[in-house]
Length: 331
Image 1 (cartoon, rainbow, N blue to C red):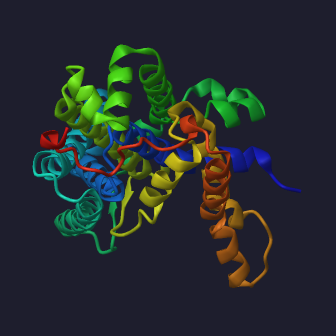
Image 2 (image 1 turned 45 degrees about the horizontal axis):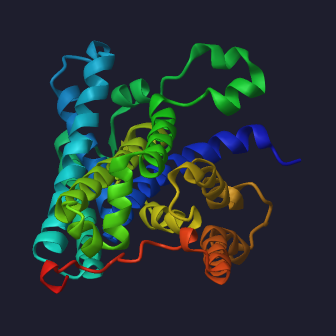
């Protein structure tokens, strides 16, 4: 029989990086910026946190000296800083210099992966490891810590309470982002910038300021997805090129959720489940069948995109000015 009790927690853990990435990208796209650099930003967020954790653990005399607060804050702040810098680079290129957003995003992804692999490989050599990976088990144990009562509540505790704090933080951020976008003046201004920056500019809204703020904040949120993957999902193990295509799945999730971060909470679990479904469905030694199962998240996204396009409802469409540079002189 299909083991839902073990499947759901793994689906949630697989989906949390996607939730961080999709929430950050949704905020970015609501401002009219199409940031295809999210995979690179998540990669930089991950390696920045790894650098912070490595420096912290290296400064201690032994693993027993690790303390929870600095073990959490140092990698967390380092990840936010690295992701912020990536967001600023993207904004400088696309908002200030008005460069092509697609090209800039793809260049940022290539740069981010190269940046992460370079520093990741350097840290592996500095650690003196004979294996092609870096283990930060001390910091990871702090990030993976969950409520002790979860073990006493059977399947309920395993399904709902057996996650580290960053899993719940991702849900809170997504719900807050949805509230801000739909219920606040700042959210209204941001959506106006994405739909019609000329109209927003004429109304006295600073288009560039909102684009910078939304893109940088979105990049920082996406970067936390990379940090979660390394410190929680991968148990503190950094290996070059091990992040996979999760950054691209996060961008696909934005389309799947119809640009609604609150929908992303459940959609990320669905995507996470589809991503690992091939591990739970017997397919024997037929590798072709496993590869077909791995296609499911992308196939579902295409189906949703086709359905929403056919319905042609404006609220289900991307921002009207998405991916287009704003030239104030043309207003």
